[in-house]
Amino acid sequence: MKIFKVIKHTFTLVCIVFAAVSCDEEFTSIESNVVGDDNFNFDTPRDVIDIVAYNANIEAQQINNLPSYLLGYFNDPVYGATSASIVTQVSPETLNPDFGSNPEVTSVILTIPYFSTAIGGDSANPIFRLDSLFVQDNNIVNLQPINLSIHENTFFLRDFDPNSTDDTENYFSRANQDTSNNLALLGSQEINFDDNIGHTFIESQSFEISNAPRAINSEEADSDANTTTILEPAFQIDLAQTAANRTFWQEKLFNSSNTEALSNLGLFETFFRGLYIKAEALNGTGSMVLLNFLDPGANIIINYTNDETVAPNTLSYRLNFTGNRLNTFINNFTSVLPVNADTTNGDPRIYLKGTEGAIGVIELFDDTTLTDCNCGTNSAGAPIVVRATALECFKKTYRKTDDEGNILPQVNGRFELKRLINEAQILIYEDATRVSNAVDANGEDYHTHDRLYIYNLDTNGSISDYDEDPTPDDTPTRIARSFSSSLRTTFVENGERVSRYRLRVTDHLNDILFNDFPNPKLGLVSTNNINIAITAPLGNSTENSTVTEVPFNTVITPRGTVLVGSNTNDANKRMRLEIFSTEPRS
Image 1 (cartoon, rainbow, N blue to C red):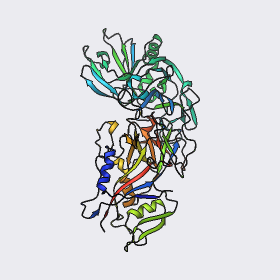
Image 2: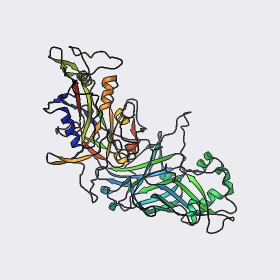
Image 3: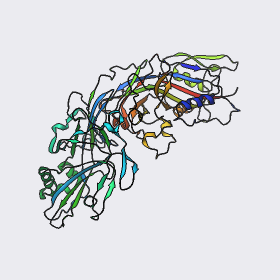
Image 4: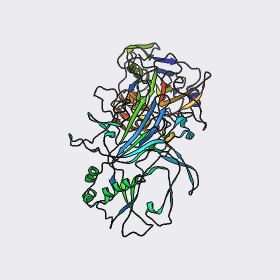
């Protein structure tokens, strides 16, 4: 049951808001519809409203058509280990190629750029930081190699559901903790990619993720012999290191019997079904990184010679990463994920983990249980007390009512308010008993760059505050949309070092009050890229499921966190809704 709790303050609202902003410096401005304080009472209280937050474990999430893809091994200190591998189709950039007389493969260079930022050096010797690198304590000194294998995939990744005329095919995760195989679900069919291996290009090779820039020589750039271009770091490896590998590519591309396959994209995707890039721990350790398949530099370049070329020149043929692509996960979670959620009273802790893990569900206002609601005073100054749900109590507290507590009719399509919401925030504390605040050698703790994102579980879309966030579009990902979703702040409170987030729901609540928008349940996830608001369906959801889709931004986030929930005796850290408002002077 959610009940309004009103805390009286002797300071003005401006002082209250200033104090709140001082504690969390990410909120640098407060939106207000107030036009001058002659007409409004700035001594209104701050409303602290109980909410209900509980856990939802996630299985069978969509793993194809992601915005980017994870590769590697990562051991989260709370949740345990995750391995991420990739299965991808490729397609020729040019159909019906003329390879000349007696073509011969010299190298096959697979390149997929990382997400990186230049942080120093010069154009000849730039220094890069990898933006989506997951290592122990976020510390680059803990970077560990992974065990890498690259195979030919023989399972055909179809694009469309054969039982439908217009539905694209979705693949779902099967992050089985009891196997080392990379699995996926296609409807009810379980796909084991370890059982669908053709030729092996790389077998159990130590591979280290590096922030070193790449030097592209004239052979790869197809330009003058003396040209060298310095590019951002990338996952790069030669798939023709052995005679057997060169023979594979020679037969696949240059054998005259395969000419027809290079004349049509559909035929080629059947003829060569792509790559299976498998990552595992190496000696029990490893690292994980996000790969940018959408970068123009993501491709496979087949370098070759023919009778017409003059040494040391070579020719090249390009395969692009188009078509279907999957991110498979193997989770070896510890037993921290809750089995049963308390959807009535809420859970004491909220567990957030991507790559098929867990999200939180937030209910701001109960709309079923009746309770006594004090929704203001009547024209004689007497209290108006009515029996109402928490949702109706919220509306009657902020909308204009008659002396019996009945909400007045809309004017020009909008309800009139007796109190204007200037700022509404969900306050969320980390659980210090489960999450370490230890600082690494770079002066940052493990969760420094964690972000939280809430979305509408009814529509699976973003809420108004996210959509209207004034943060510029070109803001770096780590601090993007920090007005609607605060950066994580760490400070000392009551002698204890704590970390906290604020999620803005001002516009969301005003939509409910002014326009009678629905009061949806909200999904809460952890993400390393809050700019991605598109959601992915769950393969096992039903029309009665609370959660039917999860944001892509959490599917590709291996790092997890634990938050203080709504059902806890610690009132100071309890997840809650706080509203700052103003009201007209009587």
